[in-house]
Amino acid sequence: MSPVRGWLPESPCGRQCLPRSGSLPSVGMVRRILRLLLVVVLLCCGFSLGCASPLLPPGIRGCAARRWFAGLLAGFGVELRVRGDTAFPGGGVGTLVVANHVSWLDVLALQAVRPMRMLAKSELRSWPLLGTFAVRSGTLFIERDRLRCLPAAVDRITGALDEGAVVGVFPEGTTWCGRASGQYRPAVFQAALDANAQVRPAVLRYRIGGEPTTAAAFVGDDTLLRSVVSVLGARGLVVELELLPPFPARQTRSTSTEREVSGGTDGRTRRELALRCARASGAVVPERSARAGWTSSGGEVAGFPGERFDRSESHPRVAPPAQEEFTVDSAVP
Image (cartoon, rainbow, N blue to C red; front, top):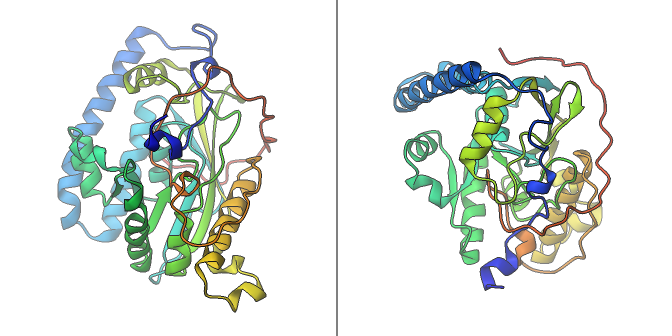
């Protein structure tokens, strides 16, 4: 195993987690083509919107972005259902949104509710069209194969939160199929502590016909093209986004730790934040042992949209978190 692979987060999920071919309801070829054409048109419109967004007032820019992402989800044939308060604090208070990571659709769902600055791998800059759009939308980049760059990335997130931005991250560091969840990596929570920002857990679930499904999962050796084609052909795919109540990052500190200023205290606090958010999202994860100082281990790596690595051939036998039935409080148009 290379040094990089030794610390990068991994998921055991793979193609064995995905539904068998023909086992789910699907749409016909004509509807798939119409969906694809709509997505292409919306992507072109999104590029124009990204170029013009710096000239638009913040309110109009945010509304246009929400509607564009919601329209893109609809173009793929995905219905978005939202539960929880969709309002975010103003007045220069930053919010770190942390969510479980299942699919590339996760980013669209989050942005359709509240446009936010996402954390992404640096390679995204060079992608045609998407790279330009990511830069113009304020994406925060990190070189994930250079561990020494992690503190600088955390500093950039801290700066964005200090400015009152909403920043979205996937602390699992890679995608899981949705039947099980990964451990939330603590490094990114340091930014919320340094900026005295709010932390807001979010939970993403995918369903077809009211039942949980892995149809949208982007895992294993699956390619983006194959995943997109699969989503375009799915009938009745729903993404449920539950926004849990926010809380101040520094609220996690106990009375005794507030008197301490060592790096070890920060390490314990960000691990407590990660564990609290993981439990709030329903993930069953073991509590990590405490380590002093600013860590440079793989356990501290933050998450990036769509990141996947080599998987083992078998899926872990982890019971999925209990799915609470709920009535959608608000839906994105």
